[in-house]
Length: 248
Ligand code: ADP
Ligand code: MG
Image (cartoon, rainbow, N blue to C red):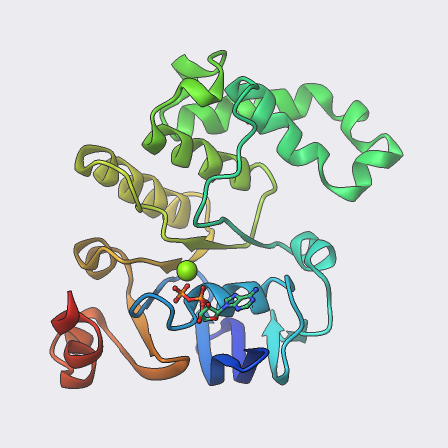
């Protein structure tokens, strides 16, 4: 039996008169890399925000590991192991890399109760290990604002890994990154999936990237789910070509 770690069932979300998501249903298979594509403004980021509890949904349900989460807030959902990264990087640009890594854990609410102090050495070890994992170990003491944009994206990815997610939602991880670093990032995403066992769901504009990365892809258009399937199926789907590929 296929186990879906996330299930989105008939979710709608409006902002005033803007129907950002209309009756969206999708599933993320445990252990998979799942892709989400669609033209700008079609509701991809909104869907991620709904899943992680950033805003309430209007109708529908969302489950994580079989448990209804659509009424939970961001913090409790994150503690279940469901995290997202943002389209814009969110690092502290005046701090060095290793401090950014450590602070990404201390932001969790249990830090108030001495959690961070009692695990300081363990957290530093983990920070160094993950900086090595993304290829930034030699830059660990550099001010993160001095890194290239692509390196900052890698740092942000490593910061998300600090919190040991079961599922990581990545919003356009390769946007603005040069082609050389894109290949490095794809490799790290695949290794995080295979070696660390993290389920990934990736919004991606770069078709080459998503076709190579994802085993199943959902395509949104105008707030609705237009089509889904294996990369090669979607590539040949006239609705997808018309809505997305043809327009780029
Ligand atoms: P995508 O990520 O696919 O580019 P978004 O989910 O960001 O699309 O946006 C979908 C639609 O919802 C857009 O029309 C956008 O302007 C609108 N929208 C998204 N977030 C908000 C918000 N917080 N308030 C008002 N409108 C929003
Ligand atoms: Mg977006």
